[in-house]
Image (cartoon, rainbow, N blue to C red; front, side):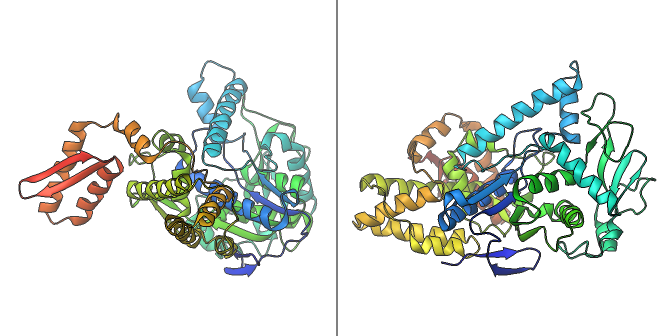
Length: 462
């Protein structure tokens, strides 16, 4: 079985050939620990967990090294700590925020069925490596000191922009670039900056007298170097990181080590929106993993995420959540009725995953196995059980009926009546898209509608 992955840098699907089959290395950008992780943050965690599982299967668990970092020094962390703990010294406030958020993140991703990465480096534990990289870049003329900052000179790397496939002018026009007076070029980016009073600080590189802290981009270059080497196999993250973060990582690492590549394959998952709109707090559709977990088991969230191919945009809807829950309930009933034991991993599922993590095709095969099991094929039930577990789906816990009973306690009859009234008005206005959306929202709440000439009535499913 050959693994083929889509490489963002080459814009094509390529055969994956590790630099060293005895030590397959993958780095994925992890969270900045200042708040609850939202559902968009969950997507790369789940996507690259599936890839981690597949690599372990193909090369052996002991031969795969998966590093996912924790950013624990950042402007957002400082702002949150200042806001939430104004009476405490800033360093103490930061410690409280990062420890709590780190714990929340790990609870959430564990509930989503994700394996812990092999290594989980923290930015603050790699300041010496960052300083060493910065010193190299300065020594080779790729970085310079100005106003107690160290900046990367983008013009010193002719191939800058290869990942995002944009010119410097295009990148400047489309980016929120801080055009500080001490920059030689507007596109130059910060590797190190002076700390403000009370902020975390470390001795600065390049003989700078004042203490400072690293810029965001240098962190990942340093942690990847420390744990995976100057070059490695796979670098992953969300599509929003292509520019500037991953573009800048490539520039830093390649210029520091004089290598033609940083990572052999660059992988990026697509954007996520909610009910057809960009997720934002201002729109009131900002969903955290913790919010979803209050309603649904982690299996449902994970399965819903895998229903869309990782490179495609995903529209997170309540109707899709209900669809995922019903599918998993069907699988659970099959393996329970058959009293299924451990079986074999489905070859068609593995082949689908080996084709650039084609999880929708893998799910088609899960449904086929379930159908075979319903016809009395005990081996299909066993294979379904083992293959689901390989994908991180436990099929354990409450039944869908029990989940709906739990959710039912939160149902507000006045709210249901208001939604039905809104749906009736939408239908009268022939706004069938809105009518269907409201129906799906009610369906996700376990509410079944019955339309008749006398009007619409409802009942609770199950």
